[in-house]
Each structure stands twice: as structure tokens, then as C-alpha cells.
Image (cartoon, rainbow, N blue to C red; front, side):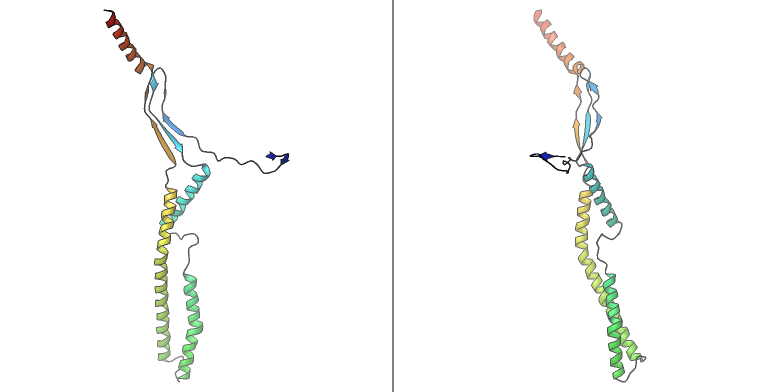
Length: 187
């Protein structure tokens, strides 16, 4: 618990996020024989960030497999409301008109008028839904690109270190050349 000016609080000190340990392959050896080539993979994200990255990729995959987006708009209630209003308002209005003109609800003219109005309603709903779907494609594609971009980020940075010669590989040939020059200078 942190204390300042003699006042202590119960809030714990912030903890820095932990990075996973790097993954190393190769590089075995000693100063005498030299060291082999080595590749190290350093994590780019904390464990929490990797979890968020995994969630982004899962959401993108769900979108690609045809699932609905979280918070997606559902057109069905709008269509249902329009159909209900049609049957509760439009059909009774048409019935009143045909009754006032001397026809009846059972006349073929009334049935034809209701059928044409219903077909017009369904056509208008289909057109509206098509326009809505086209309008939604842009934002959905942008979201998909954003999720894939985040989800497919490389999780590791790689660093390659070439082989390092040891004393036997680098020192002895140089020592032999120096001894050779020295001996050549004596004769």
C-alpha cells in the first residue's frame, strides 16, 4: 500500500503488464568452439493484449462465416410493424371505401384492391431492405478489415544472430599466420 506524507491508502500500486518470455532456438556452443546461429522470437504484446487480439480474430471469423455482427440491425421488426399497420389501417380503410360505394368486403374488386396494396407493401419492404443492406455493407467491411488487421498482427518479432566463431575457429588460424610470419622473419 503506497504512502505519501504519512498518509497510507488501500489502493495497490499499479503493476506493469508482464511480457511473455522470448523463445530462443539455436545458439548453442562455447567461447572455445564458437556459437551456432540463433533465432530469438520476442513477444510484441502482453498476455492481455494477445487475448484481445484473439477476440478480434474470432469476431472477424464469425463475420466471415456469415454470423451477424454484435449489435447488428435487424430489419424484421420494421417489416412486421409495416405489415401490422397495413392490416390494421389500410385494409379497414379500403373496406370502408368499398362498402360506401356499394361493393362489399367479399367482392372481387375489394379482394383485388387488397391484393394489389399488399403486393405493393411487400415490394416496398423488399426495396427498403435491399437499400438498407447495401448501406450496411460499407461499415461492415470496414469493421471486418479493422478486426482482421488487429487479429492478424504478428505476435512475435524475430531476431537472427549469425554463427560466431570461437577461439579454435578464429584464433588459431590467426595465431598460426602470426607465428609463420615471425618464423619467416627469423630466416
